[in-house]
Image (cartoon, rainbow, N blue to C red; front, top):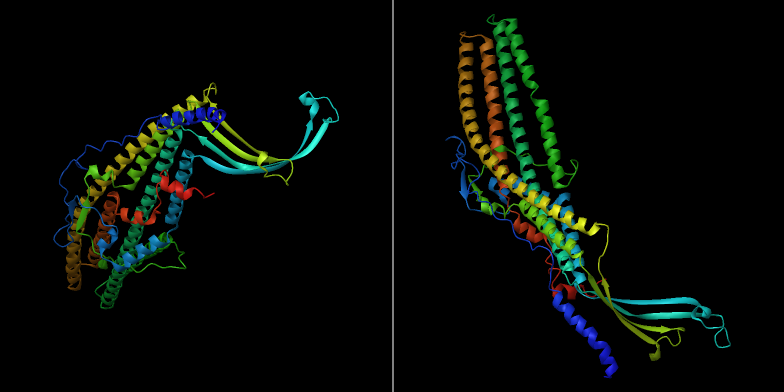
Length: 514
């Protein structure tokens, strides 16, 4: 190796060594995970009573247990299980969420490419005209005034951003947090889908139970009308009694059209969740009597909930991305060094393009330092800090909303138990009253108006009981959703097993990808 060559190369290697020691530096704040909540319960009252009486299903809270992935199977309905799985397989929102997650993961890999040298091959062919007078050469036989010639170039080029202040690493952190956010958004979409599918199925079952109750009520009205007509023929009733019975029948028939409309809307909504049109798919005829109300309700303590609910985890990922963005904006205030090198074959003709004497090379180091940008870079950093404050407030609001949802669901289940018990007792009392009133009417002790009044109370009690039972089912689903459902295993099965973008293994895999 000749001394001149060593003299040229040694400073370059020294600069690279110094730069390598600086690459580990990362400006900007490091992310600190938010402190867990200090609350030990969701309600001021520590005792939650969920029982609805001896005649109805009892429920109890099981603290510290996690919901299983297929939590809807706790309702022990094969039809419900098949419907929810069909929704998971066909729902378009989940497809969209998966694609958005994949896009975010590729953005992370793209950002990680900035840590390594960028190698390209460039080539070109130019036609040039040179005026020798510009170079101070007067025209002569060797140098005419103008010369026209072709220039052919080809060769590799290398560019490398030293990332002295860690701007690229902060960008990778930001993209990784954004990919993490999209992953939790996909989990939230899964939880919302399964919860909505179960809710619509229970709504269908409840409406069908209400329609069955309305049909029984109408049958009783028809029975009352026939009874009054027979009494009229026997001279023991009046035309007013007949009209009253007929009015009751017609009034009760108005229950059916709204219920049928609600049933159609629920069936169409469930078809949408499954990813099919109402013509292509129809839900099963869910029966509330064949859907079991879960006895054990797993519940997490507040400290564990923040690590389980996907919306809270997504808000934390946004906070992490905002923190990294502060680092990116901070690095923009400092100088940036870029190294480049190129080796080219340069010739004026194709014939001797690759001749040894036609090679050329260059090494360069470029320094860019911001001096004046009209306050742009400072404002950019301040905006990043404001965005971080907004993300922190958003995270705290998400946690507060989650705890409120759990408390509301627990309160609702306690009140549902009380309501179901009260409605059951009201139904039993109304049924006994109706029977006694009909017996008294047939014995001539009371008029038809007493029978109609007793039947009206029975109708209200029966429909009220069906709705109370439905609400207890629905609030059970709300508690499962508020607890975060069981999304972890499903989400892992949906996420591609990619090597993290910033690892050498992944970079090696991506090296020859365009």
